[in-house]
Image (tube, rainbow, N blue to C red; front, side, top):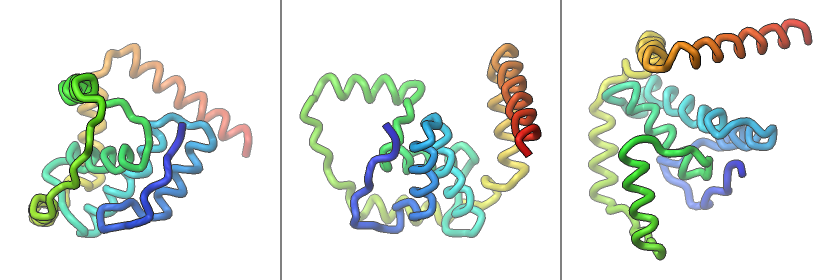
Length: 160
């Protein structure tokens, strides 16, 4: 479905306009939701690197980016226990009136993130994380991804 329109009232937790435009473009081109969400994760990595806030781990920085993407309307499926809880909540209460998050909690979260380190978004940390996640995937999936990458490279080289 693509990226939905965000509410006009912005704040410091809203994605940058440039990120939204790139995600919209990906949606128009029919790219996968994970590709669209990648733009938000990329933005988050830049924020951690430039010192806007920190992150305890690479996973946390990625999670913040994915959360922003979901709020922007990118349809990324949730995984694990959170997904089960979310679907259970949806079925139990259909009306789901969302309360505005408390200002005190928002401030506390922002303050805590600012205290965290910035090495979670370093190239080496991202590389370490990518390898760790790849190791968990079965060999068949890793092989398929490598073959797809090779095909993409070949296609790009021939179009030059």
